[in-house]
Structures are given as C-alpha cells and as structure tokens.
Image 1 (cartoon, rainbow, N blue to C red):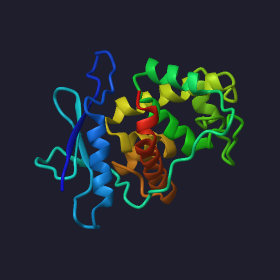
Image 2 (image 1 turned 135 degrees about the horizontal axis):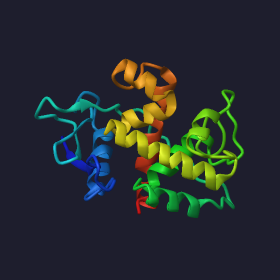
Image 3 (image 1 turned 60 degrees about the vertical axis):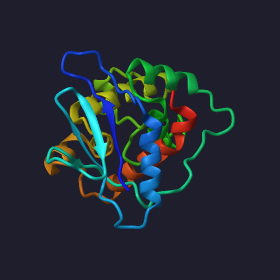
Length: 214
C-alpha cells in the first residue's frame, strides 16, 4: 500500500501558499498507513521540488525525498476545546492571513496549551501557542496572555518555520525545540519530548482535518 500527495509551498518572493488540492486523500492515505501492519509500508518522506511543491509519499521513487517523522503509534482522539471556548474566530483569521491550515493551528494549540489561554509552562512559555518571552518580543507580541496577540504571533512564527524548512515535521520540531536544534541535527532532534510532540501534533492535525480543514 502506498500513497503520494503534494502541498504547495511558497517560492522565494512569491505569495505564500500552503494548499491541499486533494488533502482528504493525503489523510486517507495516512489513515491506511496507520492501519496497516507494522513493516508493511515505508516511512512518510517529503521533498520540495523545483516548482515549490511539497511532495509526500511512503515509497520514495527518487533520492530527493527526506524522511518525515512517522505518526504511527499515536491514535488517541484529539482533544476538543472546552465548553465556551471563544477563540475560533481568532484562530481562523490568523490561519487564513498566514496561509496555514486552520486544523494545523488547532493541533498546535491543543498540543501546546490544551486550549488554555492562561497556560504558562515551567520553562516560561505563555498562552495558547506557548510563546517564549524572547520569541514573543521578536514577533512584536506585547502580551502573550492575550489570545488574539498570542495566536497572531504564534501562527506567524509557524508560517516562518514552514517556509524555512519546507517540511511540516521539521517545522513542528523547530517550534518545539527551536531551529538551532533542528539545524544542529539536520532533522528532528533525538529528544523524546520533541519526537512525541511532532507525532502528537500530526495526529491531532489528521483528526481535526474534517472539522477544521477550511
């Protein structure tokens, strides 16, 4: 069993895009990959071609493909916002302004703060998208605990990482562990927390896609 899919990635100097022309087939393919017996398929791999298209497959046919962190093993249902959660509009607007899928932003928020706008980690990360103070300052976020500022800044940062790496798993790893760690290891850093984080966000993204795909 194999699949191929592509996500339009931005060319240098062009308007930024992250489109899923047939995204439902990508996630169907991932679901089938997850359901298949272990060892039946290769890992998900990606590369950005000369047209700026981000290509996915589990059976690479040329050497430009690079390994994408597998999401096998994390099948738990993605958490849902608590009753009365009032930030869907902020998330949708920020996602569309930055050409990032709404479902992906929801997945990052779920993994980072469990939808709690007042969340503060033991490392000092704050708000829905858990911005570190130095990152918030660089993004021009004056108050990371304000949901609108936090989400706008966090989505801009996520967009920047997607553009930088052209690979969703690497962008998520950099969001969690920092670009320095991703660059040092040339891929997802071998940190248990980061590897689990990437798998978790991709799993949530797949689960949210039907609800928040537009």
